[in-house]
Amino acid sequence: MTDPTLFSSPPGKLPDTTPPQPETRTALLEPPQPPVPPASPSRLKLWLHRISVFLFVLVSAVAGVLLIILPWTPEWTDNYLLLAYPSLRPVIAHGFFRGMCSGLGMLDIWIGFWEALHYHEQE
Image (cartoon, rainbow, N blue to C red; front, side):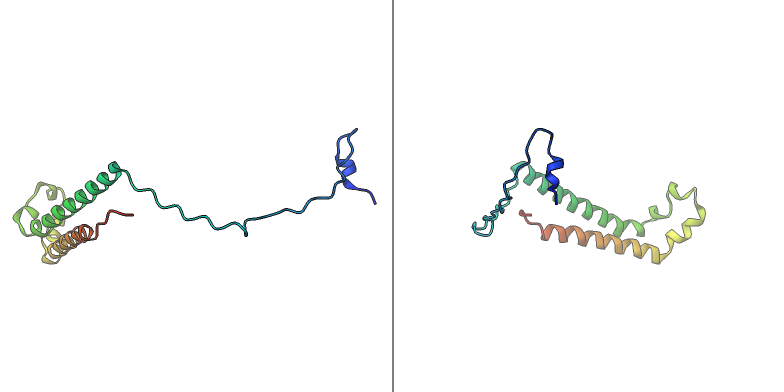
């Protein structure tokens, strides 16, 4: 039999006839690396996170209060946005639809305050 490395080596150069050395792995013998503690966020990131949570709570509370109160005022059905769609006015004026909007407002307030109560600095 012929050695396939004889034909794969460039002409004029003899093939390497040394037997392959077994790989030595010491990964099992080395102690495990300690986990790297997460980097603490910078002051700017911390304040941006605080401001974003505050704005989320504020927008949620304002939108929720508007959705609770606005459907029960006359401006809800007597506005210029409904002039183009007169058939939509009875649906908007129906008590179920108004109650559903008020329920969404209460849910919005709940979500905002839940976020404020469960705020924490660490990720």
